Amino acid sequence: MDYEIVEQKEKQVVGLTARTGNLDPDCQKIIGGLWQDIMDKQIAESIRNKANGYFVGLYSNYDFKEMTYDVTVGCEVTANGNPDLTAKTLPAGRYAMFRVHGDVVKDVSEAWNTIWALPLERTFTGDYEEYVSNENGAADVNIYIALKN
Image (cartoon, rainbow, N blue to C red):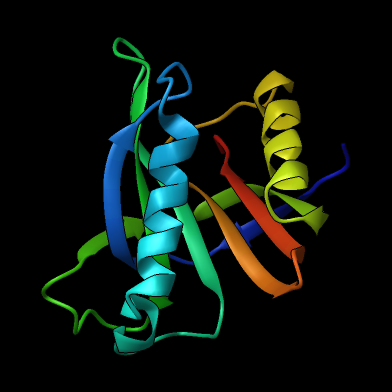
């Protein structure tokens, strides 16, 4: 799978958070539930100070002993004006950016399976999906993986 190395500025993401992991049998249900909640409960529309119109799925606070991480589903913001939601900061740095086009569930999941198998020198400080567009289940998604300098 092709990718490009990009430099990213620090970003702040605001949204709903849950803890899960790749070995959790309910992982997909938990992540899907966050997406459903942010869309169905109109939380996304209530997020203040959005930096753009994209939705973000952020993976952070990796714990390799427990094989878990935090998942935050929300939006990038210019400033946090959302005290009822979780705020997470993505550090500035180098990221491998993967472009995915296709089914919002199947193709994004397959991309992650490929990414986990790649010999990238990851920092695990925060990896994220940026949903650029999604029409009738056909999405354009950029996946960013934090890399060591």
